[in-house]
Length: 227
Length: 58
Image (cartoon, rainbow over all chains, first blue to last red; front, side, top):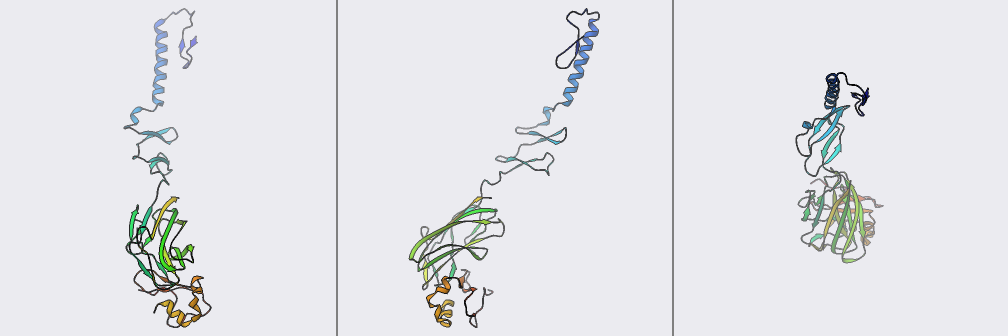
């Protein structure tokens, strides 16, 4: 007796004398029926998906479920707490807070006194992390490393700028012996995304004199770089 | 009279401002409407009477 290549169904040999054609056909038909039935039962039914973008994921060994498509611009992310071990989530690390501010008018400061620069005008503040009305500070709401830039124009002599973190001197952005100048500094800092905040202080070592205000005179900016 | 001027009056040697520039003494103003205060004092002499280290409570 010959058999088919894939499923080994029994078929008459080419030279066999078919004594009972009906029985042979019924036998082959039964074999085909059994195979198709078993294959269909093991296959994933197309009705498991309902909409464009649906995907099929395993929930356990030999068990599958539908995972509906996520919102636009989300990415498939592993998450062991979900049934499928997958979820749609916003891509991590693509962007973060950024700000640009300046001092709108001259700010008089006392000599030899580190004074917080009142950056009171926002050019942009993407995530409302800069307080330009009360504390003049940047409190980023996303953890990571930030580029901070700081430029000040001051009429005093011996100008010292400082970036404060959480109320303490953190980075001396510059020290200069010049008088009546515009000087700049920049650095990268880490913020925890919850409580860390940054402020800008300035001192000049002479008498009382103004920090020059204006969009082109005294300004600061910052941006999230990476997590 | 500013706080710095008060200190210089007590310690005339501070007039060259080097103690301020070198962070032995840090006077700070938080631009919050309160007066400037002594934020750091590592000068060789004690803080003059009537003054104290740290921000006064508003």
